[in-house]
Image (cartoon, one colour):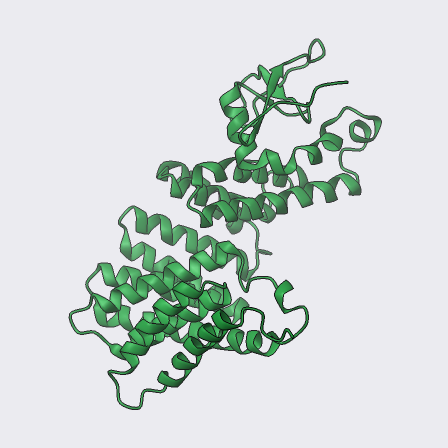
Length: 369
């Protein structure tokens, strides 16, 4: 009986290549000549074991067997590389890479996100061609990974390429424009060109408003980024005004989510409900809200109403995620701040949320007999 491939941690073993004579194979990550291959799919090659392990952790573990029918030299794959079935499989791989990369971004694992972002771009080129608008999301994904690693020169190159594609593609929609301007704004912010960053964030807000509406959480993300710049410039009143706009948007949205959650709490399949947000979105929202809360708490003249509003947002967010300890912590912060203001309208909702947590700790399965 044939032995199973050895697995070391999250990586599969590598074996010496046994490629047909005259066949050149190249590393999946760096495109140098390959000397080892994945022992599971046997259609993916690497220059050394280190790059094999990096790719396994980054993306290959998720797509290993999906690559076999696409890369095996069969009659189907060799004679019909552009057939509909093949293109559909490649589109599925692109979406998997996007999802994996975004998940790793939310955890701050930018080095691990690189293989997924690189494969996403290569696969997108295979499907859409070398200079089409459909490549822009892949360029932005790879730029975000390198931004997190501090490779700003490479980020500049990637975003320049994306910008060039957008300029020559009038069919690009508002979504691509808003994502591109956001990435360009972040790049200029990282390099200290704050005025250029403000310009791009303003365009990000415009295109997001056109696509999602002015009160969308996507749009308010642009307000948050602009507020960060104004805070760095010492323009605190402008920053506070923009942060307030962001907090109001998220408070309204989270309040609606909480109401929906409460209505479904007594349904039989309540315990099967998924968390309200994907981990990447939840991490982004939490970072925004925490930044705004710290800004207000560290201000020389604290705005208790704003502290209560943002802390209540965080309490609702963590309640929806099922974290009672964090719900109580931020809920108590919101309650203390609201009690400093006579007849504050958040006092009762905050108390009701804290009571919900207490009830769940007493009866962890609401609606059960």
